[in-house]
Length: 229
Image (tube, rainbow, N blue to C red; front, side, top):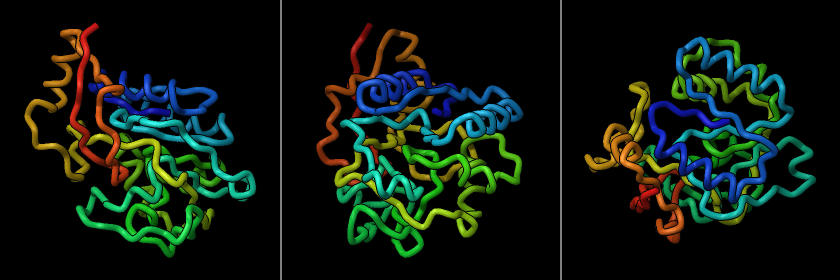
């Protein structure tokens, strides 16, 4: 499921990248038009799928998603597509983070993003591991993730796994919810209204021409490139 609100240019880029690189059986878009519908649609999505992955509309896949080892997946490990040995910088705290000793690790013993299992960005879960945590109301992606993170001590899976190199990155050009204080680009050309104007004028993000050769974090500003339809 991908969460989106008023960012069609970014949503379009994510959907095109996921169609190319992500081995998902299906995708659903939650436009969270109202708080009640946001929560209802999210719970329904969890209830009807054994395994789920969440995305926000500023995610972009830049290479083929790699499946985890079968034995690790069968044990219910959290499978992260946004982490790898290249993601040595944590965007939210603006600091370097320690890499785990291997691409399967105990998240409770890990640093930074490697110790943060409950995220809405490019991470695969068993629904049965998430549903017991959702004993609260939530009305947008920020409140859902923050309350899930606060309940990490109740989260059953002990292990996380990731490919050697990450294959998805969140590009924080802007924000559309007031609850998040994570760093975003300070370039006025990339605010949500500015990008909406480009969308309306027929421009699209050209993910083939964007430079993903030096992705060092799960969140990172990548200089946008555009084409016109």
